[in-house]
Length: 190
Image 1: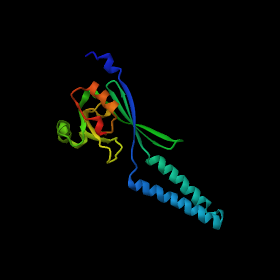
Image 2: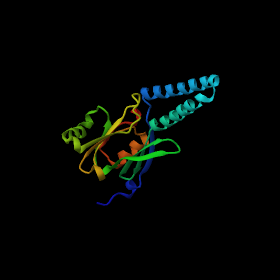
Image 3: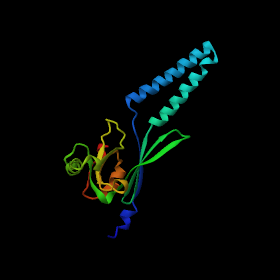
Image 4: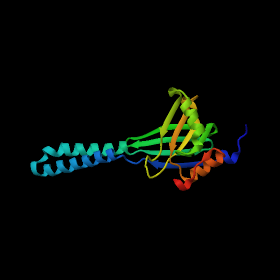
């Protein structure tokens, strides 16, 4: 099957920053409070508290890098790759999280809409070892997610893949061009 060169030349990239959970924010806050306490006490009791102060400061910096996650959506023709970026600047972690062929797409729609019925039915009918879910949205309750269902490729061959996305209006426009009749979401909701 010959592919339309205009469609295969579609290229788009988007980053989605995952929101920190309340627990992660509390842990960071407590770490910084400990740094302040150790530093304050160190001014009164001497350099003995320098090690806990610097140790706590280093751990807070490391923890902030680990829990700060950004998902990068890369669209090159029908090839859709989602990368997970995290870690510190000195040791960044860049992992290919999901790789999809949009020719194997079942449906993309807003959460809790009737258009997802076909994808949800296929997903629930598959055995537990034949389905996989990726949460690649901002995980922010103020920003609703879209859900993508597709047949897996590569290591997920034969599996049903469900991906929670946070697409921009440009990405939705590209997806609609690539997969007409399978994208049922509206950019004004996102």
